[in-house]
Amino acid sequence: MKYINKKLTIEKISVQNIAKKFGTPTYCYSYKQLSENINNFKDNFKSFSPLICFAVKSNTNVNLIREIRRFGLGADVVSKGEMVLSLKAGINPKKIVFSGVGKTSEEISYAIDKKILLINAESYSEIKVIEKIAKLKKKKVRVGIRLNPNTDAKTLSQISTGKKENKFGVNEKIFYELLKYCKNSKNIDLKCLSVHIGSQILDHRPYERMLNVVNRILNKINYKFEFIDLGGGMGISYSKKNKKLNYAKYNSAIKKFLKKHKSKIIFEPGRSIIGNTGALISKVIYIKKSGKKNFVILDAAMNDLIRPALYGAIHETLPSIKLNKKFKGNYELVGPVCESTDKFATLKKFQKLKEKDYIAICDVGAYGMSLSSNYNMRPKPLELLIKGSKTNIIRKRQKLKDLL
Ligand code: LLP
Image 1: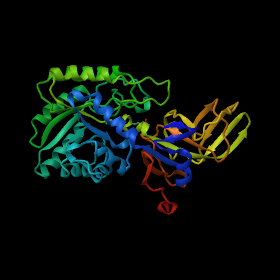
Image 2 (image 1 turned 135 degrees about the horizontal axis):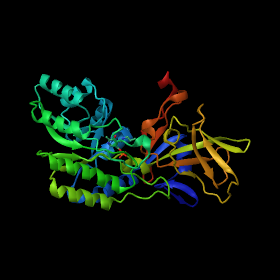
Image 3 (image 1 turned 90 degrees about the vertical axis):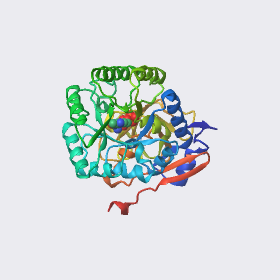
Image 4 (image 1 turned 180 degrees about the vertical axis):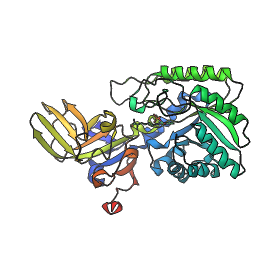
C-alpha cells in the first residue's frame, strides 16, 4: 500500500474506489504482497528446502488458501473444519499436519482416513486414542509428538505457547515415555518431533534456545525422526518501531542443528505469510466530541477485527486521501459495538477526519477475518483479492438473512 497522488493505493487501485464500489467494511488482500512473502520465506531457508505448511487458522479464506497452494505450500490445521477447508482448497493431504491439544476421536478418524502427513499429538491420552482408532482401521498412522520446550518466546503473554505453564505439548519427561510407548506400538509410526513456542516473535534468540532444547533431547535418545516441525511464529512489523526478525540468524541456527540431525524441517507460518497482505477498509460514520475525547466512530468494529480489543494490538491506520490538515487533539478510533473495548486505536497527530471519510486499518491479513464474529448481529465483511488493477471478490459480504 502506498500513496499515489495523495490517494492510498493497494497495487493499482485506490482505497477510495474500492470503498465506493464494494462498500465497507471490506477486507482487501494484495496478491503481489502475498507472493513476495512466500518467495521471501522460501528464500530465507532455501538451503534445506523445508516443507512449509501454512497455518490455516490465520486466514481461512478458501480462495486465498488456493492461491497459497499454487506456491507449493501445505497446511497446518487444528480442527476437522480446517482440514476440510484445506482439502477443498486442493492442498495435498501429504502436506497437511494436524496440531491441537483437543482433537476428538471423530477428527482423528477423519485425519487417518484422509491419509494426512502427520498428526502431531499433544498428550499421552491422545496417543492412546490415535492408537486405538488406527488399530480398528488396521492401519499404522504417522504421528508426531509436540514437545513443550519450556522456552519463553518473549512475545505477548496471550500468544505464548512454549512455556511449561502453557497447555501445549508434553514436557520432556513425558516425551521420553511417549517415545518408548510409540516405538513399541504396532499402529503408530513415530515420524516427527514438533515444537511451536508462540506467535509474533521478533527476536531470533528464543528460536535458538528452542533448537538447543531439541538438540539436547535428540542427543539423549537413540531415535531418528524423519521430520522436525519447528512450528511458526515469525513476527511482522506492525509499526515502524517494531524490529525485524533476523531470519539469517534463525536460518544459521537451523543449519547448525541439521549438521547433527538429518531430518526434514517443517514450518507452520501463518502471520508472516498473510499478515501484511491485508487491510480493513472502513468508513467514518460519526465524529463525536465527549468531554476531552474526540470519538471517530467507524462502520468496522471489534467483531470484524478483534486483535486490538483482545490483545491491545496496535494496527497502523491510514486515511484514504492524504491531506495536510492535522487534527490538534487525539482521536479515539472506535466501532459501533456495545462494548467499551470496541476501540481500534488512539490516533495522535492524525490528519483531520470528517464523516464519510474512508480509512484503512493495516496488516490485518492474519487473525483478522479468521477471528471475526457476528456479535451484535453484524454480518461479516466482504473479502477482496487485488491483483494489479483487478479486483476479485473472494468472499461475499454476509447477508443478514444468513444470520437469522
Ligand atoms: N503452529 C501452531 C501449532 C500454532 O499454534 C500457531 C499459532 C501457528 C503455527 C502459526 O503461528 P504464526 O506463524 O501465525 O505466528 N490470534 C493471535 C495469534 C494466535 C496464534 C495461535 N497459534 C493474534 O492475533 O496475534
